[in-house]
Image (tube, rainbow, N blue to C red; front, side, top):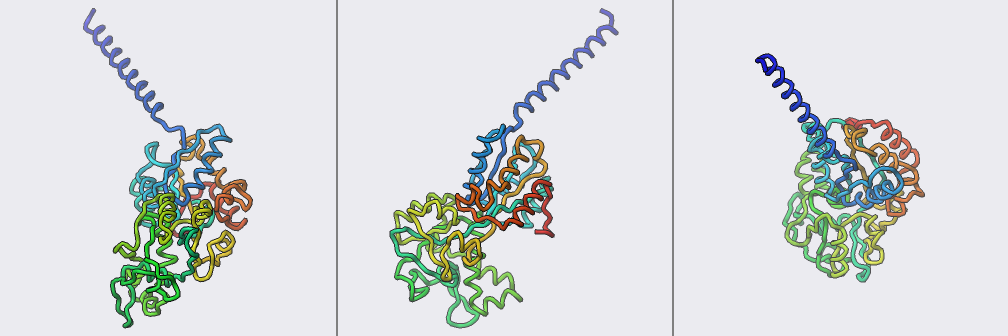
Length: 358
């Protein structure tokens, strides 16, 4: 074999080797691609998302989506970590995404996010059906849970001294304050603090006035939960809270109305400012501790992850989230018809979220 021939032969071998390597890499990538939708996030939205996922898996040609309950904050962090099959396609949230989270997403290349508002939920303060029904005000809730509370002198705060409900309000029973609730990463915790605690906090006129000239102090006073044992972080598992309430009729738990509805034989919700947490009271806005529910979608994954567009259509269909839909049977409070139609249209067009429109 001449030198020139040998050189050509070696080049051919190198080219063949490179081609084999490329084919092997493509094969590995094909094997590692994901053929199912991956959902993380809110424990409150989890049961709704799971129902849609199961129906979608049964009625479509696509695999049943994988849904994990990680809490709103934890889910959005996973969602914002990046684009690609190693990252979730959807993040459920029991609160709106924060501007800081949108900025964190952008840093990781997650730049087009579709926001889907799915309906409403109430947050309840519940106890065992074997205990008396409680009727509290948001002011009572604030005084029971805040780290610091107003003293007799205006403008002064003291570490929360209250250990029983009758110390908060003499009309309440002489029962130890023991409240089981979600961790700071939970959207339910965020919403409860904002709607119930802050709602009670601003009934003190001098604290309310702080919002205009010392917003940071106002938020610290109204949003900081006591850490002396009266409030117990029970994780993201609402089933565990229900079990503990059944075992201890003196304790209370914080979770979404939908979960109360599913466990009505075990627990009941307290009246808040005279309103019981019912489907109708949340729908008409009379129950004061209610909030919208959402999920967020990576636009970059639509058309890449099989079935993602179709799953969005199922979730935003009238058979799912409508007034007579299967999600309302699970405790979701539907939005008005016109709002549902507007959101369904924006989801169909994959309109990305802008914080200006948020």
